[in-house]
Each structure stands twice: as C-alpha cells, then as structure tokens.
Image (cartoon, rainbow, N blue to C red; front, side, top):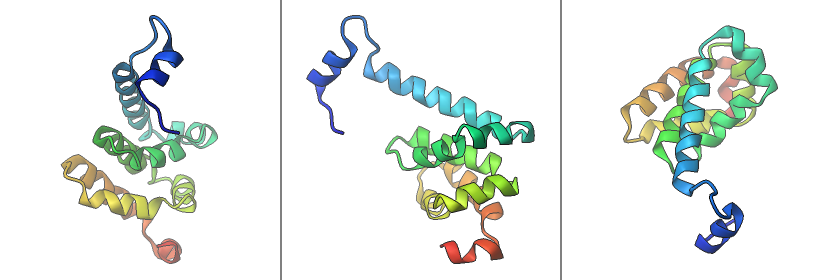
Length: 127
C-alpha cells in the first residue's frame, strides 16, 4: 500500500512517531535480533516467531542497512539444519544470492557465509 505525507499525518496524529524515527527503530530491532541469531539456544524461538522469514523480508527492502542486518541474521542462523531448511523452503537462496552484488562489503560477506551452509546437494534443485 502506498502512502503520502497526508496519510502519515492522519495515522500518527499529534505527537506520533515520525517516519524517520520509525525506520531507525526498525533497523535497530532487526540488528539486535540478528545478533541473537548466532546462539543455538535461540533457534527454536526464532522458528516459532518467524524471525527467519523476517530476515528474508528485510533482504527485499531498498534500505541497505535492513538488507545487511537481514542477511547477517540468515548467516548467523543457517548453520542449524532446521533453520537452513526453513530458509530454503521460503525461497531464501535466490534472495541471498542477490546480496552478492551489494555495494556493502558486510552484506556480501554475510551472503557468502550463508550460502556456504545453504547450498548443498539437498538444496541443489531449489535454485
């Protein structure tokens, strides 16, 4: 759904959150969740809360920070076979491959690390 300045004013009302603050908060939240993605203790919670799908959604955003944090979260979590399965079933391999052409070095590094775990003989037919 597209928006404009008037719709944003109507939605937020007086004293509401500014769009720029909202987007910065979104970046911080995704970055923090991506940092939790390396710990195997959190893997089951991440699958239960659809965090892996959130990371994949972030990869499709035009915001380079969200792309970096999204693919970083995938890289941190895909060493677990169950997480890797969720990511591949959701079409994550082509999305991660697209990150290889990013101008941000961290994004490319995270994509390479993630693809190391995601690309194997069982996922060969998915891409």
